[in-house]
Image 1 (cartoon, rainbow, N blue to C red):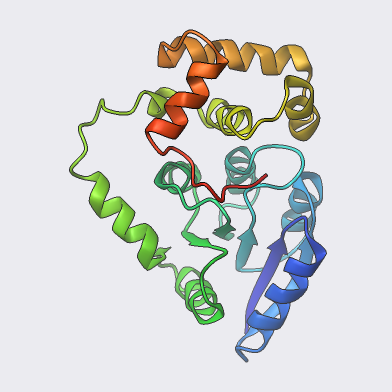
Image 2: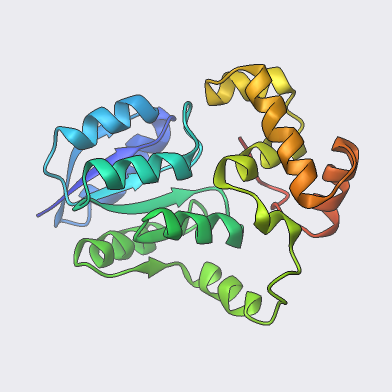
Length: 215
């Protein structure tokens, strides 16, 4: 049996994932978490093989959390299951230490296949994401200014584009408003964009985030 942990801030999603995975017959759900702190506590106290991780839980950004989990439990295989279908998120997740990346639009059988693949030591990327990777190979390396951003800056960039205020972003990420303002300044400087409105226009023009991207 493959022992699996589930980390997602929505109870209905966790229940759905539990049903799908346990129905496979060779997967056992060893625990669940609903935010970054409970996820870290969970992985440190279990011998599970795979963690199915949502990138958008309260607390630290999902990429930061992957780094922390890899440092705490290097043997745990991390399968990202997220609403973020952008290539940039997948690239950052893999660089942080994820072993697989599947979007929440994927069918249940793909999720089961992904868990089995990463549990055996392999790497899994959904077909739609693999196509995005292939298409990106033809893009000039310096064509995307947003690629200069750190993982946390990219997360703040996404939240600004989604319409969150500085205060709302600070509350979501559990940091001060001053810290978020600093991130915003760095984003504008690195991307050489004059103000927030231009930042939003850039994201729309270059289709940086999916229209369905939520928070």
